[in-house]
Image 1 (cartoon, each protein chain N blue to C red):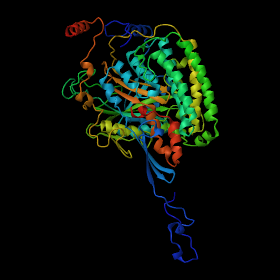
Image 2: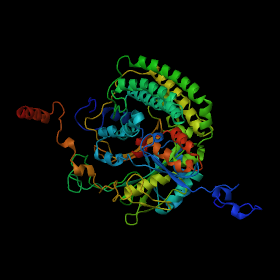
Image 3: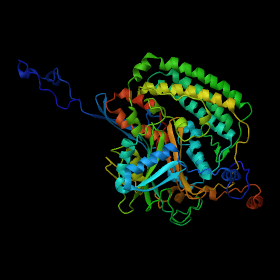
Image 4: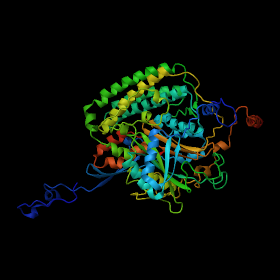
Length: 394
Length: 240
């Protein structure tokens, strides 16, 4: 990538013999001008409207600038014009693949401020549905990652297997993508009859699906060649950029808010392993998510065995007024750390809500990460970071 | 709405009252790790600390404007807070009177108190920037706050310390108009480049409500058993 060419070789021939450009540059590296390439906003590899402006030198990325905001809906402003129960509808739409998991930290924040706690059964069901969202999100990723590097088959498996989990979520909450099932103080409803047994069956099916993906994708030679040592995130750089969740654990950082954060839901009672991978490349991110899908299935099975009986709703006043105060509630969502910093002034709606979404920070590392990469690897990296546009643009 | 099991009266739920009477645990108490982290911060920053507090177990520290960058350096390099969660702003001014022309004719949004109050660790003016950093190794975190002078609107940038602060500061800049000194390029992030105004400031109206009032205002359905709902049912019969 040197900008100045080495001097022309001296030939003992008549200079007039060099008629064409190619002749005159014989044996010399051609100087290619930089090219600007627009990836998106409607590019299949970006899962939505992420626009990536990359400056290329040949096949190499010199600089990359993600342009976001094509789907900005201004949720932080809208929350100031809504009551607390209305806001759960909005925040369902932040990360739409795991909507249920979005609701949990917000409801947790309101409950902490009000000093109420959901009954144990509600806590269990919340945890089960959060883990089911994780399985649904990751199973799709496990298939789609193959698609992004050129293997079509796994994508069909991913969509097929996710459907089983979405059916469960729909069965319990009534909504496939936007359950809006959490209430401040508990849940809207109890589980339907037969749901627990059905979930057990599906979880076993999902564990089998993980084996399929391991054989089909992770064990594939071409997949390894496309993902190994592509897009390495060193742990300290990732943390300073705010990269979280599986992306950071794939860089060897042993940090999971389910275990290490302020205790929430029933995670302190569960027995689970936090998976890490030392490499930090695209393959590591795939591998960590594969293991976490299995771990989530096992956690769901564990919780189904320990599911307590009782009410699913605490005693809550009919009009929810949240006392004055501020609270930071964070959870480990499928895509990473999701948090709400809620300022309340004692009204029926919050004074200000700062929404900390995982993908926003995960994607902010792209300018650093893409420098020096080849164009086909850009697609691999985008797919392995696994972001949802709604989670970036809020 | 919610699965109503309580009474109509607005107040503390009974369960919470029982808990308070039994053990009276302080919800704001800091655990050992967070207490130690806050103490180390106060040692390192010295006189630059304006106030400290706790929000439900999460330490909050307000520093002087001139020490904002230094606070980040101490957090990252001395106290192992290697993870930047977010940087954001807040406008403590109460929104202009609801229902008035300034609020865009909106009466549906929840009424906030009209007097200015500040959050944990206080503030000396309308604007504040707050940030949250965490340690992935020691498994604790802290919220840092800094006041922003309403006339100058200048804040020291964290980008030299945490590169991830780049986008967060660009967002805060366009939403509140705070200028981050030392930021490489304050460009619009979410909004189109020609956008005027700072949407998250309290005096910026929610434009969609200006164009069209909240539809909930028109077709309000009363709760079953409410006097109003009976009236509306009668009036519906009359009209039909």
